[in-house]
Length: 489
Image 1 (spheres, rainbow, N blue to C red):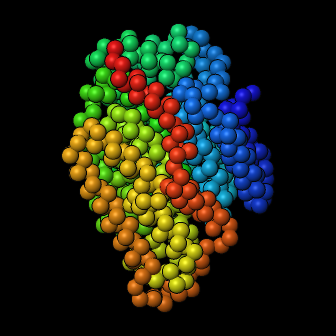
Image 2: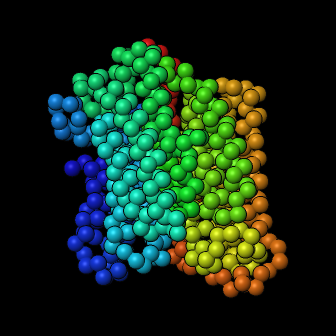
Image 3: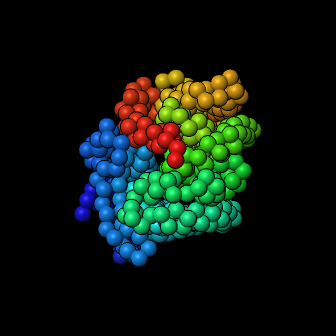
């Protein structure tokens, strides 16, 4: 068994052990989930250590025929595009498991769903067969439906149903496009990139356009692309905070990951949709920023800010140049750290105060100085402050956009200004002003909470100060993908 299979199936083994453990022993259930999430992270670290970033093509490939009649296969592989996402999935799942102590009802089912969700997310990034990719894509729906619907807030049932209906609706369009691609896939043995390359050669321009349109809708719902974002605010607000970490930190990136793959391999259709995607990116950045700025609910603010930040990813993809695509991948990683840190800190604050209304807070810096430091760093990274990974990602994306659109990129600066406005506003309302009596005794971060938050915030700062390893990780693969766009059939 190769290292990718070991990485992929470790959460399943943990979920199986949870299934046979007695449900009343919460301590051993938590310990088992923490052990297997940590073990998965160890395997992901090992994979990252032996991964060769100078190679543009798939590494550690595994291939077994599943159904020769339809050409489906158990095909795994990793390259510079999927490697950072697979690592982030393992890291954020481990963080989410570590900060789930507030879950006291149905503990066994909760951790079972978390590990199953990790299995699905890893499968999406490692799968190199379209059928397998689609199966893993759908697998993520099942645990998320229960995680939101069973352990969410007051409107959890509406949020879980909304999420599933939106995602399944988008999946129908994606499935139709994948079926269109699959007719060219048999002789290529199930390789995700090879099948799309063959489609590029064999399909007419009109076919490419319709196929990419279906993929844009399918991936755009998960990303989410405006106006397919309707499920996101409610799902984020009602989901438990550890689940929001995964929802925003990884699940949104699945859509961007799939869209990058599709656009690189369907270049004629990509150029056809380039202007439309750029306009949608502009709308997402400004619309998401405006909605985040006017929110009083902290989780809703972070949720709408994700729409704005994913608009930056879409801008990088739509630029169709190497710098912009590099910025999109960097922003996917940066937003993973930033959104995870913000949802973690907001969730911990809510557990102490039982309110998410930003107007209820003031001068928390006096009672919770450690919380203030971590939250301020995360918010400054969200606005793209130099010295944080958010700045590196946004700089690459905006540079790529400027190469393509020139002075029109001034419009996108509005999105950056809006990010700065709601970030500074939040810092001011949380940590300055007159001291409110009910906020004087709020507990600061504990040692274990500081450790988890410290990992995420350290990633934000370290990759902001020394971004070259992150850039180099995907550089060769992005260069290869860009070359595919340049060579039109």
